[in-house]
Length: 449
Image (cartoon, rainbow, N blue to C red; front, side):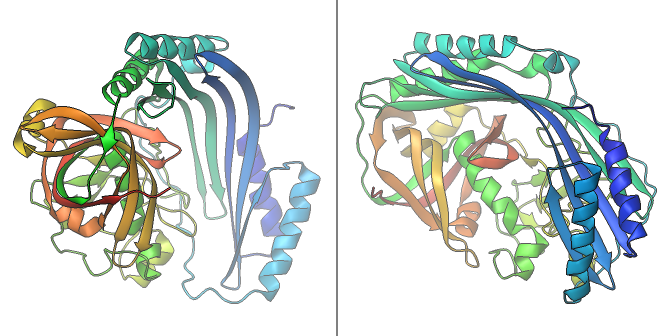
């Protein structure tokens, strides 16, 4: 692909849009080079690299808003797309929640540990990282190892017709390792390593975690339904926090799809629980200095000392809620950047000892909400489920489902560890930094295939 300056591309879109007589134009461009390494049965199977540019276009005319995503970035194609958008705007209905884009210019904070030239220069070394993870998983007790490694570098640029010019460049690298300690694939474990800079990326640790957990998961018995005290591992609790982060979005609150709709300024967790959204987090996997409307991002406390402190807003939802933007745009849906569960007082062994008897769940998937408004959900544990007896992990179990309510779950938190882990993979789209979290009286049912 011919080298494209994505700032020039964004500027072209805005200028061409204004020529068509619209009131506002914004162009958000993502240019990225991605590498992928996949491995299975203890060996690398695929390694590939691709270069992509994606342009998101926003236009407003007479209080009518139209948007699209474009991957053909030739000037001819972009002009055709802009003309089509204007045609759509001419026949569209007025936006009930119309609000002008924020007026710039703005000053943006310089972020730390979000760009590393060593990741840009990796090349074939990424294959070696995958092999390193495989070796560690096998040495820790796995028999078969599979997984995926991604690395990327690129830039995000935003230009709007309201004097906003913003750009962030960044790098990312992550590996997901699955280990199987038996031939049937029942004894499973998973490990992750997620980083923006190479010095904090540890594929060996991810492989070791996967291998050790799969070895512990050998010879499981079927779990019994009931009410248990649960210790959720970081991978598992990150999945629940990822879904919960959507409940803080004012879009979902307004749509009747959030169990927190009537919980603003109300306590939903013990006073020791504080959860923040931190777009400036050093090495945060989704840290960014500006939101999609160009507003400088900032830290927001979602739950402060157990109380729901704020919803997440762009300028349109803020107008409807009679408040100010929290710099979490999404042109349509405000969203979190990096969810951070503040650390606790326990070591891992101390947390198990405090729980005494219950279940340790390392990971989960297929989280589904039966009722978004009330928060009723279910999820299927995987990659290490263990009975805890007298404060110690005793034996592996399988075949269970967590069937409960997300607000009740937060109310019943009893403790959490000092150590945290950053989690991001295809089951956790919003990066989450979380400890092990203990919750009392969680309903367990039998999983069905």
